[in-house]
Length: 242
Image (cartoon, rainbow, N blue to C red):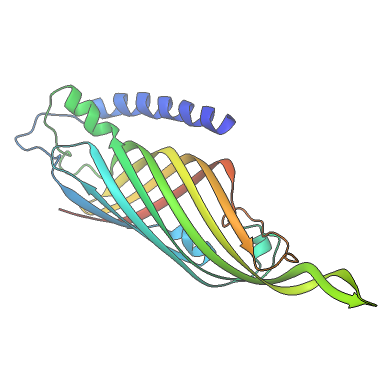
């Protein structure tokens, strides 16, 4: 609940600030800058968990709305996972493979302010950088295959009786994670092509994991097995193509 209230407060602040600031930058122009374009960006924070995520965003001509598709892949070994800023796991070394998909839509506030005033606009000549606030929502799905050495229950028999001892064993875990994200962001252009995008969002996620045996303890961390409500920050950078 606190994260949702924080998000609503930020939306109100950003909308009020952006409207006041952007009013000074709007002027009549013979061309409409709401042209169709593609934005291709990289999300570098995924590298912290041995992931690679790229996003392709498409905005139709004359519309403040955009839609994007973000495939992501995970592979390799994460050393010191229990001190990783995105994991903080109950395991130290983890081999991970996985994939995911994210579908999102954005509503750019600058475009809505301008269009509501029936004004054509374009970025002022030599105005650099140029920023554009937006609201967004997203659906995501991820699958992970995790292999690690960690504490678990080791079964043995003594005089025909099953005895479980706590010790280090090789473990494997399959994790399915889905989620819904709602947030705000700001895309900043430097020149006509290059952009950096900062965003924050409230998310509801649920993870289901299947340890390879009853002896395995559930894997726990801040990313792979995240469930519940939380608030997160992120950024991407990339290029715009018309």
